[in-house]
Image (cartoon, rainbow, N blue to C red; front, side, top):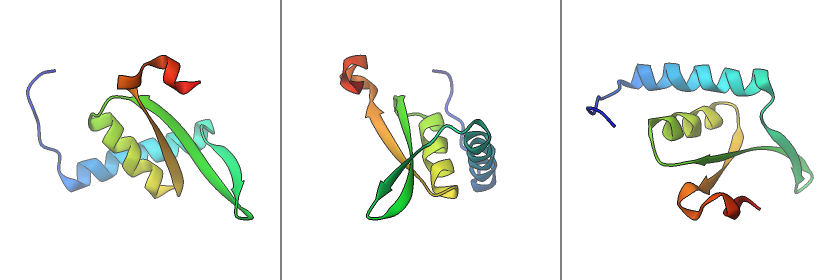
Length: 79
């Protein structure tokens, strides 16, 4: 766990920008058609953390809907 450290707005933006570029480069999203238009989605299985928050912000940068799967429900909840 460690000691808590505050992040500046510019640091959060830098992290989210880096993550959003990686998502696009690695093609981690899947395309669905909803109401006649494409919608990009990305599933995430994790606990609440700075990584989760950074990914959520990154998804908004590239117009991707983030589908959060609560880790508290266990792996079986993904089926």
